[in-house]
Amino acid sequence: MRIFRPNKLAAAWLLSLLLLPLSLAAAPLQVEVHDPYLDLRTGPGRGYPVTQSIERGSVIGIVNRRTDWYQVEADGASGWVHREQLRATLAAAGVAEGLRAAILDRHIEDRLRAGLNAGVFDDEPVVSFWGGYRFTPHWSAELAVAQAAGDYSSTRLIRLEAAARPWPQQRFPLHLLAGVGWIENQPRRTLVDDAKEDGWNLNLGLGASWQLEPRFALRADWRWNRARFDGDSENYHELTAGFVLLF
Image (cartoon, rainbow, N blue to C red; front, side, top):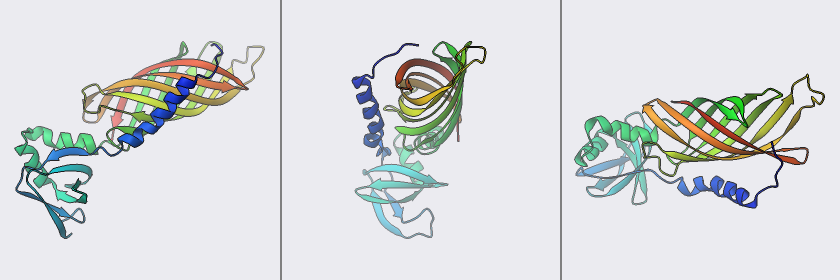
């Protein structure tokens, strides 16, 4: 472990990454209407009144879902459309039957996720468990607990991260990570100096995932961590891989 000075460029990268989700938040699934029209209702049900009709050729954005009803936006208006009308639109656009629900679900569902990772933390074995919430297809928030056990000390880390996915539609989508957390380093009792150290930890990272099934994916991450103990800063590199469950 080596001591280093804070890097202004890294700090600027951290700030930019934390702000990136704000610029990507408004990213609904965009489709062109191929039916004669779509009825926009005030709520997800046939008992709600129709406030507007969208004509063929218009472009709509799908932003939410409740059972068989989808909330869409078009020309500054927002309303709910039944799934049957959207299926016809996707079918006319040339999307295969088996892919229609998958395309919609990929952009709207699977907001909750949890995972288990294993790897190395500064050459020490580490295991971490994390849970996250996907706000949009482009960004999510994740909370993780990691435990590393070495020959001379054990390290525990709790962190909150922002994860940005600029290209979620790719087969192996990349993600950028930026987070803050609390780190504790406990030396072995057999050492002369066994005082526990703790402090704030900042991290930057990147990774990739691969969705094998609708509810199961693989993921790999690399992180650069900067921990501050009693006025000193230490640099840690972390490399992990594991699986993700989507709910």
